[in-house]
Image 1 (tube, rainbow, N blue to C red):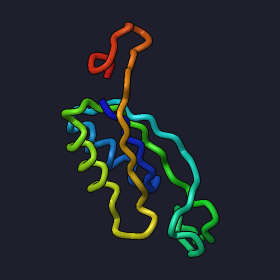
Image 2 (cartoon, one colour; image 1 turned 30 degrees about the horizontal axis):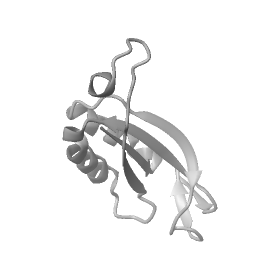
Image 3 (spheres, rainbow, N blue to C red; image 1 turned 30 degrees about the vertical axis):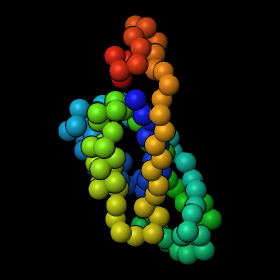
Image 4 (cartoon, helix red, strand yellow; image 1 turned 120 degrees about the vertical axis):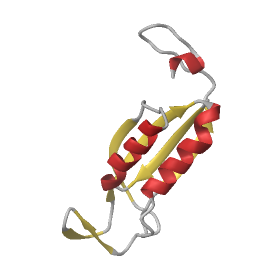
Length: 112
């Protein structure tokens, strides 16, 4: 099992959610956040307004996947988050040691 964390532009969340749903990956946690990377120091459009970049609105997605779903999930996220513009985001992958569904007590792959 792996955890995927990806920081994306807010307007891409529906595309990514739909792509993951088509793969049968239904569990996603989304956290609204702000950040900056290499785009620091330029002006960006957000919801039709120009703004000086200090911290740019982003969304952090956390997605737990089975090993066999990892590559397809990563490809779905990257292809649907990419605009080709600076600030498209980052994707981080790390192994999960254990997962427990609190309601049922199911563990690991059964809990996903």
